[in-house]
Amino acid sequence: MVFPHPKRGFSYLPVMKRMHFLSLILVWTAWSCHSFNLKWETLTPPAREHLRGLSPVSGEICWASGMNGTVLRTLDGGQNWEISVISQADSMDLRDIEGLDEQTALAITAGSPGQIFRTADGGKSWNLVYRDTNPAIFFDGMDFWDAQHGLAFGDPIDGRFVILLTEDGGLSWKEIPGPEALAGEGGFAASGTSIATAGSSSVWIGTGLGETSRVLRSTDRGKSWTAFATTVKTGEGCGIFSLAFWNENEGVAVGGCYGDSANANANCALTRDGGQTWTLVKEKNPRGYRSCVTSNGDGSLLICSGRTGMDYSTDQGKSWLPMEELGYYACALTAGNVAWASGRKGRLAKLSQP
Image 1 (cartoon, rainbow, N blue to C red):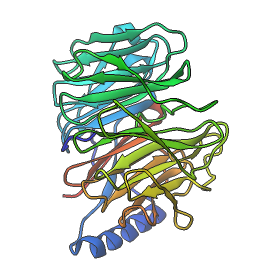
Image 2: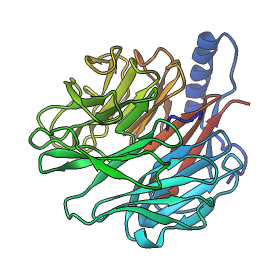
Image 3: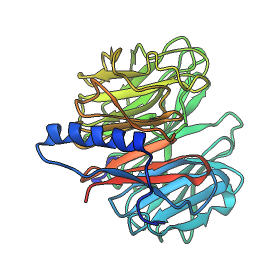
């Protein structure tokens, strides 16, 4: 997301985890010149479905989505959650969700039929706003520049990535010519964040699966594309799983191989020129495969998540430190450095400063 974007009290943390958080607090104090009292709060899961879609609107409002057409919404910082099931997708996985505000959200399915649903009443009802019955369709994620304009993308069909554009807040979508794909190349729907937008018209897509991992960039809302190679790990099940940009020039890519979760080799790269060149983080990089990365407004705080835990950076991705041992599919930062996370069997967590 690019918008400015049930509680039983704080869970007891073992000694080692408290040491990790103490380290985090000390580092963060040096970074910000004043102390923050940080603690991940494990929220009571309202549902048991795996949750890969995550889209906080603020520190109080958050949307999440997952298997069997499940959508969750909280309006009170995670203390209580409302559950809705999209009947036309009750056997499908909603790999990404975009919350435009507390009442409006869009959810996208992975697999065929490719469908996008929209609610304007907080999830009480969902309208089908796009449908593609091609057996080869597989959407990987979507992102928005603002409340009206956004892109969704899917794996290649007939040699080109599938690109959808909305200019009316997701009420309608039109397919536009996508960038050419290399042999075997595809995207990842592990967290819905292998697409990232910044500014008013720039968008990036991370790829993998083939002989190279690339970043596809458009600076005109998908009308034209340029591809750039990266040094993120390649091979079957490997590549760039998530991107985050804090402006139109600076960003981070994370990934690795989902079949080898503890392998930290070539799993994080940085760009300072809008994605044209990428520098691999070879030391103090995230501790394994990472399916999601998120940034605050200026890149001074980054968090990434994966099966083997979570890591954070306070130097725009140059170095990373352990943050949490529990694994999560997705994580997202909002204004005020409030972070949310979602994962297996309905797992949800929140990190905030009082």
